Image (cartoon, rainbow, N blue to C red; front, top):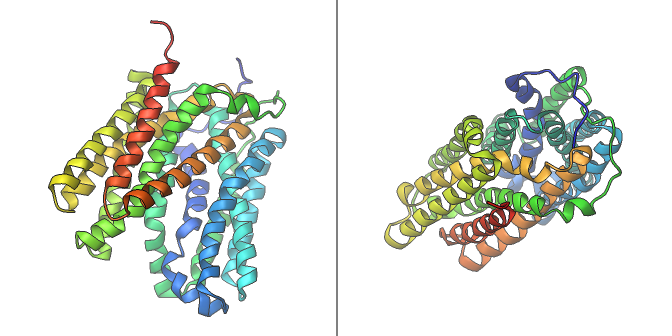
Length: 394
């Protein structure tokens, strides 16, 4: 299948990342940056802790569900208008959140913020698919954007705590709003339309019945789910059992994301050598190696840097290698409906990670490495089985 040549997108990879990354960062940052001030917000807004907690859950839900709407919309009207409108809504709601004085208004504005973030993220990844499909640069961009989605939630609460300590909790949303305004103006000047001229009729069924889509989305889910479970269990293991301080935990946590970012930087070289399928297979194998090391640590060592964090560094390499290729593999056949395909790709991943990841933590206990081991074994082996089935005749 041939696609219209993109004429106006001539940015280098660093310039493209500088343009795209803010939308990835802000959408992820808004999820949990105000976690440190959640205990004080019920009194400030005259509501219950349950309502404030609900704003966290609703953001995640609307953020994922909104992609089903904005993916097809970006295929119909274009990436640029969806990105700019979504970012404008995100910026406006963030600034209004800084001045909100009632719980009901706060909840509504959080929902609008999630809708804007969802639109911006879909348009960003659809643009990557439009411009870099079949090009080696795509692996670098996908890998780094995927690493940001994991790295930012690790640092968001730290940034929120620092801002709130010096300027109060409202400043958190003010900072997000001002940063998103800056990103909006930059995109307004530099983000050109990339949607193919001949956009196909919006159809979900061909995507959901595509076996390669499911195999590569499974690999994406295995990778992001591994980080999600690490995120969920690390505080109880490292602080509760290993005795790390809050700052020590934050620094150690950040090293895992750093490994992912460094690996993503060199992913292009690996992919040129092994190909998309080969790189995903090796990424899954590295995840399984990390699970084996976690098992050894759980059985024979006390909770520590060596028993839990070092194996996670290995897993982080597998995560970065896999996420650098899963989008290309899953979306390869859907160039004319890339927005819809991107939306389904993220939505399916969110469902798998949210449901399966939570089940493993609940069943195997959140104060040990067993949920992470179990999740990796099931999802990585499922992905490898799918890759084996995709192999053509020798």
